Image (cartoon, rainbow, N blue to C red):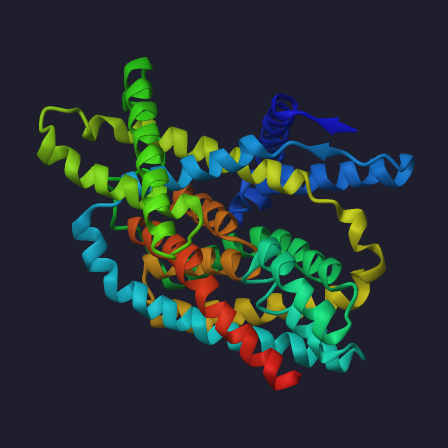
Length: 397
């Protein structure tokens, strides 16, 4: 049964409202900062998978609109970045990159160790390590031919996708409670309440109207267009990155140049509306991503791979709690970054953003976290992960 783009987005909105309704009625989900799209999306994927098991009819979704929402979301992150904050966050960016690179190695050791203990080929542990966890579905698919051709693991793609799916779900469920624990234990508070676009708490006194929405859409589309040109230029130079990375940088350029080029432009008045667009796109993106997970593909691999994923969950929670939080400063920003890092290391960058949004909308904003974490997830993880994966393949080959 196929759903076109209109039907997919409509269903995604229903799923998002479902998550909001459940979180309102179950206080523990709200208290532990479980993102609303994760609640609704996981429940929808279970229902759709149950429908498949009962009828043998699979639901297929057109996710083109979902992918464009991801581009818009990261563009709004760029509009929330000020150069002075980027400069101040530079050292923290390098520190988190070093922590993330070290954890890629630890993540693979964890996967290999559990695979060996459960009687699996140790190289399956790599598929349950940084390939599927930090890399996500895309990296799992990209590396599976290597495991098939070099090592004869014919189910490599299914294993990687299964681990990525488990990780995506657990990453969305674990980051919020971790931040809640850190904030409560260390009595942390946000000190950042200015120039916010994402992770923002709404104020009814803020003006959001048709004019501000039109201006936001205009500047977002300008940034997306500029990002497209940047991607073409760097592509000719042999540098390839995801399209949303270029749009994020374009948003940074525009938001810092606009006050100087057009001083009378009402750029400051657009922040509440930009926050609205940002949260809308992130929530709907994640709801569609989770509701489209095909859980029935995990049947034959669920047992041993679930043990690997649970070990990875334990490892990342300990690493984020005892290492990332402390090294990043043991302050409120560090707590938010830790919640995002759990989502990123188990699932994907959008999961990290959803975790941090759920935390900051309740406990207060953290501009630094919303700049550092997506840059690490979008730029540095894939590059360093490729090196680490190749090292382990040679080690186990």
